[in-house]
Figure (cartoon, one colour):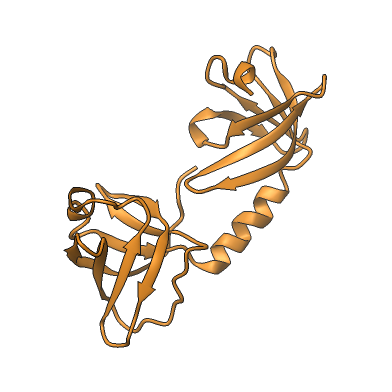
Amino acid sequence: MSYKTGKSIGRITKVKGYERSVTVVLEGSFTEEITGKKPVFLETEGRPVPFFVTWADYRGGNTIKLNLDGCESLENIDDLKGCRVLLEPADKEADRDKDLKKLNGFRIITPDKSLEAVIRGIIDNPGQLLIKAQTKDGKELLIPLHEDLIVSIDKKRKSIIMKLPEGLAEIN
């Protein structure tokens, strides 16, 4: 599953290592509220990477300062200079959540049929969705919801064929 980021709010132009903050020059008008509840996405090497904001300082104008969780040193933060900053639109997030709830009750089956479990929920970990599933014998499994693991989906039969990494069922 890839991130569906939408709105680009700007580009990082300055980094301040002693503050562990970045300055973003905004594109157009800025009306979004940035909080630590949802990540911002920094586009690095063409891919959006999620970062949680520990604080944001917007005083109007065309810049905003952000302090990003995980950027504890000047080396970490200096690599971010020039990255585009993206936000996931709220409506896409709501649609995604609604679609994920539809997976409850689907069966997960491995191609060799060595594992079968029923989806009981989806856990939204930062940067990774996890399927909470239960086997026939009552064992609870946490399985990464990633497009590379999905072989096929049969909506009529409410089943998903997944090729799981070796040993995943044993570590849960």
